[in-house]
Length: 165
Image (cartoon, rainbow, N blue to C red; front, side, top):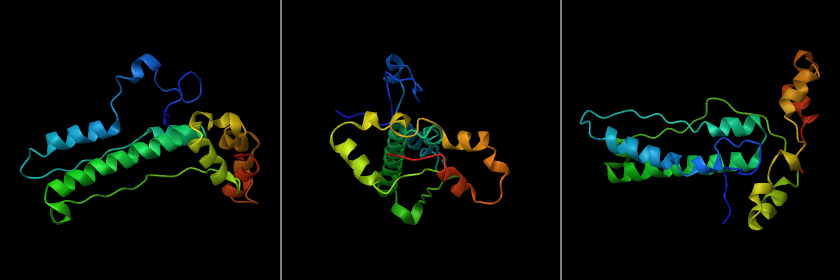
């Protein structure tokens, strides 16, 4: 089995000790329980959910956690869509999926092939900053004073510090 979204046995983005990880509910479980509880109200309800690990993963430039978070979000949305289908459809329900901000991520042109090969070979755990630059490109750019240089865009500055191989 390939585990996406966690990196046990490393110090990078290891949010939960391995022994505690089995007790951390998946976001889908949280959503399903919230929908079950909130749907008891005859007047309707509003539910907002956030998968915050995606932000941590992006700040750390940690592709394995980033992919795991995306799959987690996909599971959350699937649970809501299932609820909607079983409770009046979109005539009586609405679903909005959005982001409050984004992050910069530099990928070399051959990245999709590299990523696909690691996933197919069951080596998603190797998709870490160690096979990137092993640095946080934003921190490196700030340290170099690039945030004070208006001669290029942020994206152009960050390209100087991040490459995914």
